[in-house]
Length: 264
Image (cartoon, rainbow, N blue to C red; front, side, top):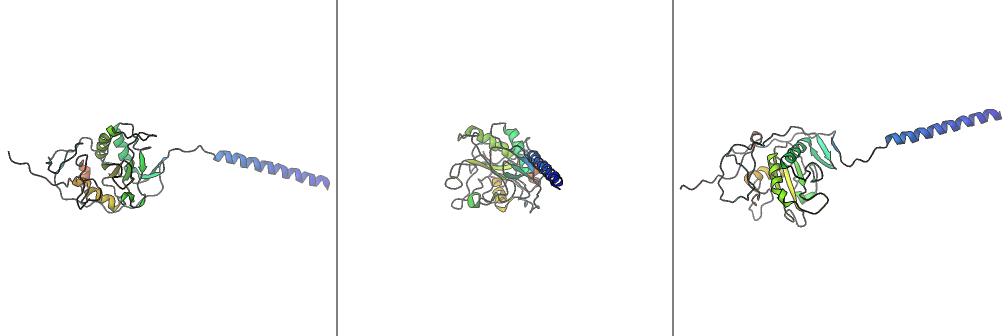
């Protein structure tokens, strides 16, 4: 009897050791290195919202980086050669914790190619993504898709790359964004300098973002997208809108008033 009990005890120890080793090996197998940056498509999608309402056709306009004047004359021209229609891909992508749809990411990638500078539009420069509620700070423009805020500082510093800003804005506009520089305190007291961009034609734009395109203070009307001051919208400091054929197909046009040129 004693021998039988000893034999069973030995078997129990062996089983216990095997179980402990299995748990240790299983734990090692599940260990993965820390992920610093993720760039993958989410498993959720959004339902399409309303499509843009076609605006009254007027004329096209070649953008410049010089500040506009209220008496400027708009001259019809052909679309910029850099125009490229973005893909109709609305799967969600997470970049460093910020959500954007794949269409917006593709537009940022193209803008990066046109810009060619050190600011990383698809990585460290992103300071706010889409589908994000930060209260009244962004007027609701980030509640839907197509909205992104971008830093204009050198990575890891507080140095603003002022010389890059005009080129960067032009690249974003050519890639299909309504994009503006927001100076310090311009949005609200204490707000930092950054670029605010809205992807034109995005099917999931919030109503506030849509208004920044063709509303009374909108991009296609030559304004800053900010709420009017004393019932008067503020001018776009970086020229008029870039207009591509794919934007027209989505219902957008240059909505600035056409001023006649005085006869000689």
